[in-house]
Every structure is written in C-alpha cells, then in structure tokens.
Length: 311
Ligand code: ADP
Image (cartoon, rainbow, N blue to C red; front, side, top):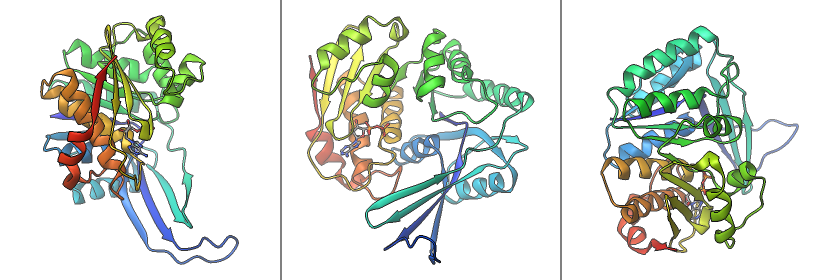
C-alpha cells in the first residue's frame, strides 16, 4: 500500500454563498470533508486504483469526527491519537472569491510525536511508497520530515516529500534524501532566494545543480500551475506542458500531482510515463470542481496531450 502522511489534518468546512454580507447574518449550508494535503493525495490514489493508508495525528471530538468522515469516504486510516483537538478550516466561496479561515491546530507533545514515530516505522514496513505532505503542527520540530524520510529510505521505500518553508529546508539541509521533492515555482524561488520564471529554465537548472541541498535527490520537480512543470532527474532535465483546457478549481492540484508520481513510481514506469501520469493528475484535478478529485472522464484526452520534452 501507499502510505500518506498528514501531520496537521483538518476538518474542512466549505460554505458557498452568492454574497458574503459582512457584519450581518449569513445563512449557510456546510460541506464537510476530511482535509489536509495528504488526505487529498489519498483520495486521488484511490481514484487511480491504489491501495492506500492515511496516517498522521488526530485528537479530540474533531479527531473522532474526522475518522467518521474518512470512513464515509472509504479512506483506510491509522492515525496516532493526541490530546489536543484536531483543527477546523473554513473556506467561504463568495462572488468569485475564496475567503479562508485556518486554525493553527493543536500543540503536540514530545511523547505524542514519539508514539507517532514508532507507529510510522511499523507502517513503513508494509508500504511500497510513502508520501509526506503539508505543514507541521505546533510543538513538532522542523526536522521531523527529515527523520520520517530517513526511516523510509533506510527501509528501502521510496518517499515523496511535498512541503515548504522550514520543514522542507530542514529535510534538504539534513541530507536525508527523499526520492522526490515537488516545490512549486514560488517555493523553489523562496528556497534559492531567486525570482525565476518558467522562461528561465537554464538559470533555474544551473542554480539547482550548483546547490548541494538538491544533490542525490532522484526527482526534483518544480511545478508551475497552468504552465505545467520542470523536472530535474540526475543529469536530465524535462519540460512538461499540458493542453490549454480551462481550470475550474486548481486547489489540490499539487496533491493530485504527488498522487500521480507515487502511482507511477510504484508502477515502475519510465521517466516520460511518470511525468505524463503526474501532470495528467494535476491537470485533471484542476478540471474538477471538487478538491482532490480527478475529472477521470478526460483522462485519455489530457494524457494524450501532455508534452514531455527532454532539454
Ligand atoms: P501546488 O498546488 O503545489 O502549488 P501547482 O499549482 O504548480 O502546485 O500545480 C501542480 C500541477 O497541477 C501543475 O504542474 C499542473 O499540472 C496542474 N495545474 C495546477 N494549476 C493548474 C491550472 N490552473 N490549469 C491547469 N493545470 C494546473
């Protein structure tokens, strides 16, 4: 099975309003889902037909409710219990805008993190691949993902790391070698202290190749929204573009891309096929109104139109 890690999950509540009236009553119908980037990865993997297990930290009444929501969606899960309450995130869609209210989440104790690490090491032993996504909750040191990557790699299991800021930086600095990292263009510019665009591939390639933090990572993929992605694979560089079909909801496209990579890497595909599958997943997520859900009816059309060019 593919193990997906979500350390800071949330109950995502979405409200659709024709108009948000500030400083007055708004009557709403909520739509609640088990949220967090790793949960989006799990949903997409299930659509691709992969066996999945979602793990991470869950606590309190909201944690119990989150388990109900995962059961409702048929997502197999094994989370470590914590004392704090799992957070709630509100997403208000109104007048073409998306207003979000995101709770920070519970504080994790050293003992809770230790219990998770023990459970994680046992689950890794049953996994064909691990994906690690998103932010870390309060109380968890920034080097947590570096440790999780090391555990998976020493068990010979490929591990895909999709994070940003301090946890990603700490993993790269620590020399823990994930199989794949997938910063988006903004995130890679943040890490490198640059402001490259998709037109500056040579410069980006040089900056990455001369930066020791990316040495020996099998796949460094820089995703660039509607402009597709750029993949650095050892000495090879690939530019991937996709058909100009309009997007309806690009939230979760990065998570869908990670699911595509995990699916394709576990399947033992060649580089071009891996990139095609991953980009098709990102694009199909953007073509579906639901976050973490692929518009599967367009698979053949998009897969056939994705272009992978070796530079
Ligand atoms: P993240 O969600 O992590 O910021 P990106 O926005 O770069 O990642 O999206 C990941 C992938 O999803 C892209 O490489 C692309 O394949 C697809 N994608 C994202 N946004 C769009 C969009 N607006 N139109 C078409 N495809 C998109």
